[in-house]
Amino acid sequence: MTPPPKRSRPQGGSRGGDPRRYGARNTERRQGPRPPELGGDQVEGRRAVLALLTSGTRPVQRVAMAAELESSPQLDEIEAICRKKRVPLDVIPRARLERLATTESHQGVVAKARELRPVLLDDLLAAPGTPFLLLCDGLTDPHNLGSLLRSADGAGVTGVVLPRHRSVRITPTVAKVAAGAIEHLTFATVPGIPTALDQLAKAGVEVIGLAGEASKDLYDIDVSSRPVAIVVGSEERGLAALSRKRCTELASIPQLGKVESLNASVAGAVALFEVARQRRR
Image 1 (tube, rainbow, N blue to C red):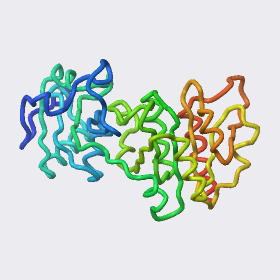
Image 2 (image 1 turned 90 degrees about the horizontal axis):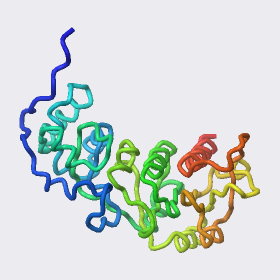
Image 3 (image 1 turned 90 degrees about the vertical axis):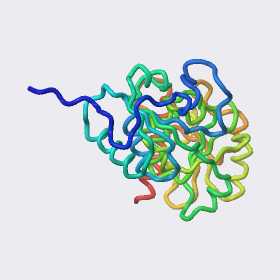
Image 4 (image 1 turned 135 degrees about the vertical axis):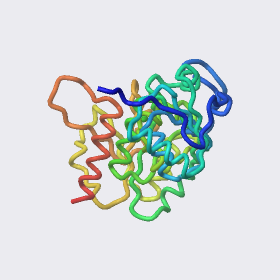
């Protein structure tokens, strides 16, 4: 059986590629320049890069692809879109692409784009429809944030709120795990989550903080029609003390097993899809 052809130089692409065009290298593996306010400028992985190219939500500066890759529908589509949109495509040796990438599972594709631009919290509240927000109170694991953002998009979240400090940014790992969800979500960054919770409460938003020890059952709270915000705490400590005080409700997710609590991204996903379920009803 004849093996699939290797990736060749596409028409209109360029061979080589300057690593400097893709920003600081390996920023997640070692200390580098101070990260931007939100991030998202480097996207890695086939699905994430394809979503970046097809969404049209922000300019794409360049795409790099490993020359040794075997042909696949996703790679062919990436090449076709780059040609159509005249996005420079660099087909380079895999060893060179490894130096550009910051994740271990980049799948041979790296893109450089304009950073994600956050909006104001007021903008999320003023958007059409009933607000359905996700607030991340001190998440530091990029895999958790990426997974949570993917769930947020699937559940129909209208806005994501991230603190500017002591929280993971939209790194290449977050973008890869989110599998393109960052292109379809609207983000707001705030100086602190507790102050944002005050603002939401004054705007009439039902703020539900997830806490494993809470006596109230998440499934007993009616969020079918009113504005709602789900607050997910950090992986180790959960919700910060000030955030707890400013939530309208603290709720737990009923469990039948022996493990004390769910992973932050899993708990957040359960809560987000419970809101989505009630709204469909």
